[in-house]
Amino acid sequence: MIKPILRLVGVGSAKTVSDGLPAKETKFPLLVLISFAFLFMLAVIFVFADFLAPFDYREQDLLNRLKAPVFLGGDWKFLLGTDELGRDILSRLLFATRFSLLVAFLGTSIGAILGTFLGFVAAHFRGLVEEVIMAMVDVQASLPFMLIALAILAFFGSSFILFIFVMGIYGWEVFARLTRGMVLSANTDGYAVAVSSLGATPGRIYARHILPNIISVLIVQFTLNFPQTILLETSLSFLGLGIKPPLTSLGQMLGAGRSHLLLAWWISVLPGAAIFLTTLSISIVGDWLRDRLDPTLRGRQG
Amino acid sequence: MNFNFFVIKLVRALLTLGVVITFTFVVLMLSGDPIENLVGDDAPPEVVEYYTIKYGLDRPLHEQYFSYIGAIMVGDFGVSFSDDTPALELVLEAIPKTIQLGLTAFLVSLAISIPLGVTAALHRNKPIDRFAMSFAVFGFSIPNFFFGICLILLFSLTLRILPSSGSDTWWHLILPVITLATHEAGTVVRFTRSAMLEVLNKSYMRTAKAKGVPRRPRIQWHALPNAAIPIVTILGLRLGHLVAGSIVIETVFAWPGVGRLLVNSVTSRELAVVQAILIIVATTMVFANLFVDVMYSWIDPRVRTGGAADKE
Image 1 (cartoon, rainbow over the protein chains, first blue to last red):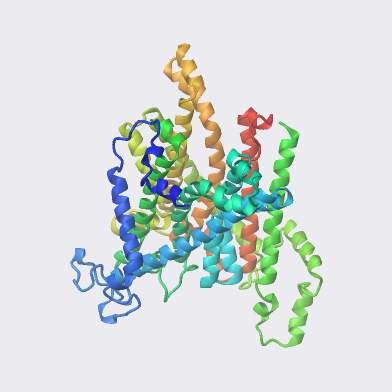
Image 2 (cartoon, rainbow over the protein chains, first blue to last red; image 1 turned 30 degrees about the vertical axis):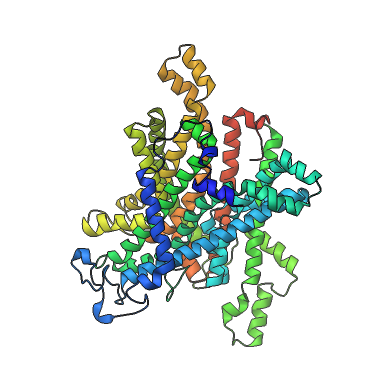
């Protein structure tokens, strides 16, 4: 289990990764390092938001409304200024980041687990089961998910649980399709045939032998889906249909700050920049990981 | 054109539509009592009964299902709660605006991204390639609503040279088109570049070089047509992203298209309008995908003769 993940991160088994290929001159390009640093910062915010935030994110201070950030000559008490209710933007930003990351992580994980499971089911049972699952994959893949999400939220009214559910069904089809394909080909591979002729049950083969072999591809897919889920969550919250006050997320802050653009642009631009930098760093790190992981890609570039 | 190939694709398209329509029917049934939504929960029983019979809600479920499908076939999606306008009418009113915005953005993004992607592939690791890739990453990662707001802040509120909302003149089109096209172009540049690189590394390109074909015709007649195949496919798929992108962008720029109508209808829970948009957009998407599949097999003979895999 742990080995493919280590290989993915590039720890320990660097030799197997670069077998037969010219050594890379720069292992960590500057941009990748900066992105890693930013992601590390996000992780710290995620864990320690309560300790880092100078105020509670709901605490209003009506005497200090729409204060400018320090870099625009504002008060040192509110480093990044305040919003229309006098809430400290830095504190809100920290909590919003935590919440957006949490929702996106939960959503992507649910989608990944569900999709992988259905992919295994499709590849195991074949026949009608496979047809039905793959038809569902086709349906979801042929429609923009934003539309499906809005329809579900319209029909059932938006609640937090439903919102997480909506985030969870986003992207499952990619995992289902990937897993089915890989399991089908793995089932005919030597190692799976060998273990099965030794008398291992299908469940054991899937969990102990095939899953560890395909998990690195699934993790790469996870890094591809994660920023997309962040964008979905922030878009929906931006429209006022996702996370709602008193909770906050980066999209919700951005959407709420829109009406004060002329007087206090920082209310919406700061969370927007946070979303952008987050998706950007995940993409850069993800690209870098893929390049290291996928030998065919590296061969083409080298 | 292979007949079987077309029939399989058509059946799949219709199946997808069937699933979407069934989905809307099921969620409509599950989403609460429509009569109660209509007349309020303290209405007298006679009124409730009147509406139940009027809308056929006393009939068995399968009968309701078929009459639902029948109604959709003739374009009857029900009426909007607030002013009794047929849902279809509201949607049809908004469609030209969305097409105007979406098509312009699509064409602008193609005009930028395809030449840029091809040039980047031909000049690998040169400054132009780096520029193209930076542009791609930027366009791909920046949330389009954030980009739109930045443009409004810069061009409408600070410089005061472009309008930020509405659709009265062509000037109103500029900012939403830039927003949508940047995101589109980011993805297509990257894809065009890698499709082109892949072709340039093929052995027939080496052969062409070896037999003395000059660089220009080599690229024009050997590389470009082959690189076009995956690019056309991805363009068809991008259509869906354009629709999804316009949902948010129309709201940001107060552009009176289908996207804004959808968001407003979701907010005010105008279910008839939401389902009309869902079904109409799904139909458009499914037939667009079908069209792309047919185009694809026309460009690439291997697909229709069964040389290449038909499933994925």
